[in-house]
Image (cartoon, rainbow, N blue to C red; front, side, top):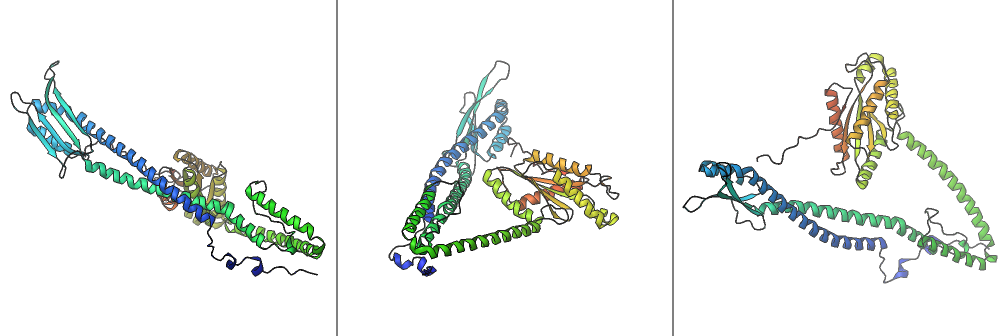
Length: 465
């Protein structure tokens, strides 16, 4: 006599059986615990980094005061010796313009008279407070060996500048620590959900559906075959329990076993058909991501890959280089030789660019018309420049005659490159914009060349304000 399989209403336990118990996810509880720990960690980290930032700010201000002393000592000593009060006043006014200086005072030692003090304080300055203060004895040598003390230079830092710098550093510290904590909590919750919660739910669902008619349906989790841990022990224990019950009910479950055999066969057929459909779908997806003319990845594939590579470079803290390659005077080539020759030219250029990439992780894609993009994960500016020059040379070495080119007698490419560095990461749109600007500079410079990012000029920290 056939046993009626349990319905979904019978298999899944009702919430009414847990009256008075509120369901609480282990993943959520773990995330809350992680957030609490991260909160404590943030407080301690902010306290430590704030102390370090404060110390660094005082040392920086101290160094600035020392620089002012070193730059002004000789001229101040000479001005005091010559009693040039205008020069002394000018030096004091110049020193007070430095943002970190709160008060400048020059004490002039006069023979048989009280010292004369020339000072200037910043508006609102009430004292150095926690800021550093320095006093330098001014010495002048009117003749070799005639060393004489002529006065004293007093410099006091501006405490408000210290606090302002600390507030700027503190906001960055809090933001970084908070972002790290949130990402850590999200990562832990995601990993826990993927490795534990999903499988525990499947085990619970499997046990809820166990009936005398399906004891031979052993528990299987979609996990790596060689994984041996507590979940593996749980699966093994559930399967052993089912096998023990099956031994007692073997005589009564012959029909169910036969039905299970047919069901497994049908499941195998369905699985085979599903695998065939998945293979066909994968082929269609590959066709949708491939440029029909060149065989390279198309713009869609490029957009998907750049999102993945940007996340990976941020996670692994490594650079990412982007090259944008454009065939020089391609429209003139098409107009002169025709679209068939133009298609053959693009195919040859694509093959040359593909052949110029050595590393397995590098990728070139056709992103539109005669424009190609190259992603170089882990490549810094120097490495990306070498690759770009190699690709440019590869295309030129194809020796495709170009009668309409003003850059060379053969088909060439102009390449613009940009690099996202780990210490200063940017969004991909910004990286693409930088590479596009570099490509424009390469074209403006005469084409058939590589142009990189513009390096800003270095401004000396010791320059006068």
